[in-house]
Image (tube, rainbow, N blue to C red; front, side, top):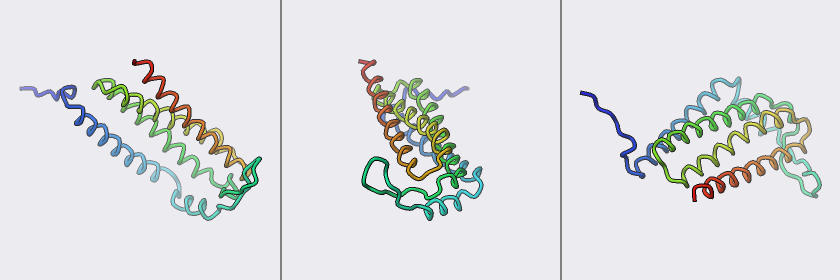
Length: 164
């Protein structure tokens, strides 16, 4: 007597509840792993926030908070990289589940948007943030994050457009 769970027969609402549970559980697992695998992460966070100072935003007349010595926080940046890459991988798993369970196009597009955002953020963190030396570069990093967010929205719109 073999019982097979037919996940494809679930209602859309139950499928979305399943995805939400997997995603939230995955986030908690990622947070725990990053915290335990990173050396002195809590101390790094405290030092990072206590090192914030006002720095001039390039080509503007305003100043915003930025770390006084960005290179002093490499361990924190690497933890952020690990978090972002892990969430990107989690989103890829969710995408495979969504395809397998025939989720709606808008949910597939949302998941692809999240993949582009988290993997793009991990790339910027590893290549740019970890090599930052002066406080004004902090703002260039955030401009890159805004760019990645825009690319993620474009990726989402392409998926929706392609399915119509």
